[in-house]
Length: 269
Image (cartoon, rainbow, N blue to C red):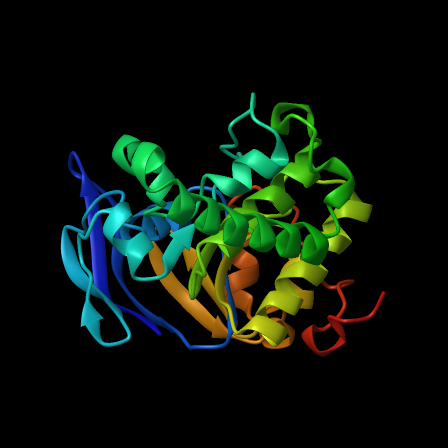
C-alpha cells in the first residue's frame, strides 16, 4: 500500500534520513523501531506530508504522493496520529468525533438556514457513526466527558476513534503506547488488532515498547542513524547483532523484547 523509495531528508546540512526504502503491505500492521534520533518520526512526517523529502519518493497504491500536504492525503485515506494526542480539550469526546468527517453540509451557513432537512439527515448519520465508534472502542462511558479530562490512554483511544470517523485506509500510529497504563494499553492493542482484522485498516506503528511491537507487528523495520538497518519478524530481530548494538549504543535498555510475547500470540490476554 505504501512504498517508500530511497527517501532522504536533510536539515541544514544534517542528514536525518538516508536513502530509506521500505514497503507497508496492505492489510498489515507494520512496525518501525529504533533508538531515539534514528529518524523514525522524520520518515513518518515525510509520508504524512508534513514536509517533503530532500530525495526519493513516496507512493500510495502506486500513486506518487511525495510532498502532498496532509489535508490532501486525508482525502486519500492516509492519516496519522501523534505521540502527544491533539484533542479539542474543551469539547466532549462525542463532539471531538462529530467534527471529524469532512464536507458536512452544516458547516455552510447557507445550508444550515435553507437546507436544514439535509443537514439534519447528515447529522443523524454522523451520530450513528459516533455511537458505533464509541461502542467499538468501549469508551461510551466517557462520551460526554470533556476530552481534556481524559487519561493519557483514553486520549489515545479517542485518537483511534477519530481515524475511524475518516474511514481511513492507512494509519500512521506514532507511539500509541507512550504514557499509557498497562490496562488501557491492552485495550489499545486489542482495538488496533480488531480494526486491522475486522475492518481492513492498514497500520504502520512507531513504538518503543517492544512487548507491544512484538504483539502487534509483522514485519518490523529497524532504523538507526537515519538508515534502515534490518527488517523482519521480532523473533529474528532480537537475535540480530546489528540491531542489538544500535539499541545498546543508543542508550536504551537493550532488552529488545526478549520477554515479550511473540507476534503470533498477540491475541493472548
